[in-house]
Image (cartoon, rainbow over all chains, first blue to last red; front, side, top):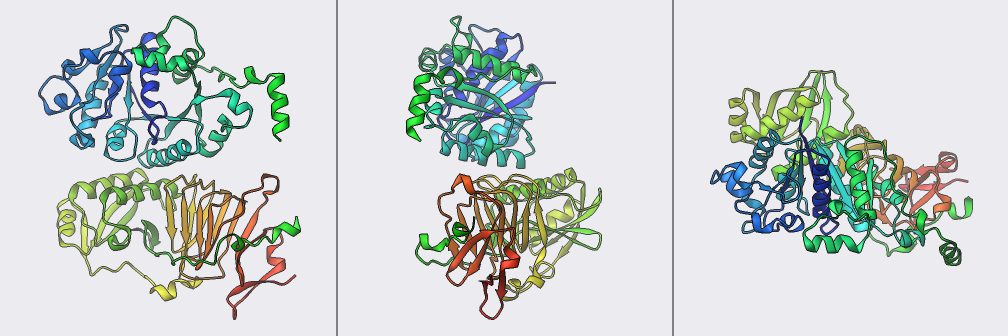
Length: 265
Length: 271
């Protein structure tokens, strides 16, 4: 049974696409056949993050219109043979596809893969409806900011209304030193409002930006880093393993910070 | 806990009134005999967009605890909504998921009637009027309220519950959510959104929450914004309407210390 998972957030810029690229790479590394579907028509980015831009020949639009076979539109990853990308069209907008077409397309893909990860556009309009239409599960990406959490809350409500009840949360871009000084919402604060199970926490890290610019997902990097561990742990949790969430704050609970916190109160 | 308990909320903002709510802005489910009535909102009040209607229906089905027997017969009051056969089928499928069997479609539109008949539903074409609708001036009085509505889930940002009766939420209401009730609002959790009790003008209506962290409270035509929440003192509170605006009091002793003065149409502190 193929797992069809949508990665969504409501708000833009919280790291949906980065999350999709990294989780997708990590899932492929574990030996599963996975297809990443870029549902962000008109603003496609996923091919850039995976470093596959120059291999895109056809897009989902051509596959839907019947101008090419679905297999022709799929782009194989250069590092992971298990990973394939279905790119979005860059020259069209989100109204170019309707939910029925999208559902048919994703279900057709599902016959050949173990996992399908759909990268959802920001917003809750037609692009969002297209992205969630075939999904059985959802991953909500949020950052510890009130705006992102508010939008995530709205999106969870819409997912539930559309019968997607298997919803899990990733808190992205946590900055432990700021949480420690109580300048940033903590993971607990976010969970208290959203009330959905936590799938993982990813720290804010400059290396994610450099790896994005290079088109090399950090989850595949041979050099060990906290974000890479976090992404790989998320994938293992997705597969049902019971792995504790990294305690990012603990490493920042230094004597100096404790004294600083004392003086803030 | 007494001195702060009677905090006057309306001090914080200039006197302000809010418009009364609209009774039928949302999908409603009621029972009549053994038949479950699904009342679609008036498109002139709620808008006629199919996506919004669909969200509203799905949200209501998701939030409502089933008060019917499995396989109960359902009757759709579509009013002035224009629905095609694909949309009617989608509604029937959504109802089937909660074990309701859509048999009847009541509509004021000829096209909808034709589509419904073509899809095999029994059709009744009427002038647009849902069953037992009180006129707006009567709707504020408790005897015309609909049965209480139980919402058994978290009310999330962007979700709005409006009901011509009392609303009871078993869960939290998150910031960005709205409850509009012709009757009282009882939140067995945190109230963090907007709550409008007595939306048809009934000043006796109250808002109760285990943790009152509301963005805004409205009772009848009054509006108040609670002070910045002080986390050390969050206990169950009751919001009620007095001469000087909406006030909060600890809920445990409320009915011993307050009474509603019918002649003045406000709550009085009798202690």
